[in-house]
Amino acid sequence: MARSAKAVPWFLFAAGGTITAFVLPVMLFVTNIAPPIGLFSNAMSWETMHGFVENWLVKLVLLGIIGFGVWHAAHRLRVCAHDFGLRADTVVAYVVYALAGIGTLATIWALLMI
Image (cartoon, rainbow, N blue to C red; front, side, top):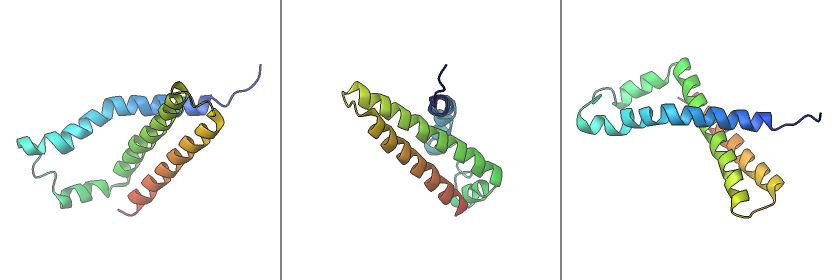
C-alpha cells in the first residue's frame, strides 16, 4: 500500500473545524455580545484583556484556536476551488497552505509581541 500525505491536512482541517465550531461562538459572545448588554463590562477593559493575554498559557490557547482555524479555512478553500471548477489542485494547495502557514506565523509573531 502506498503512503499518503493526506493525513496532515485532514488532521489540521478536522481539528480546526472542531475548535472553530465549539470555541469561536463562545469567544464571539464574550467579546462582542455580552459587553453591550452589561455582562463582563469591566473585564473587557484594555488593561484587563492585556493582562489576560500576557499569560503564556492563554497565548498558547489563542495560537491553537487561530492557527487551527486558519488551516481549516485553507483546506475548505482548496475544496471550494475544486468545486468551482479550478482543477489546478497542486497550485491551489500550495497557495492556500502557504497562506495558512503565513497566517500561523503572523499569529505567533503577534502573540510574542504582547
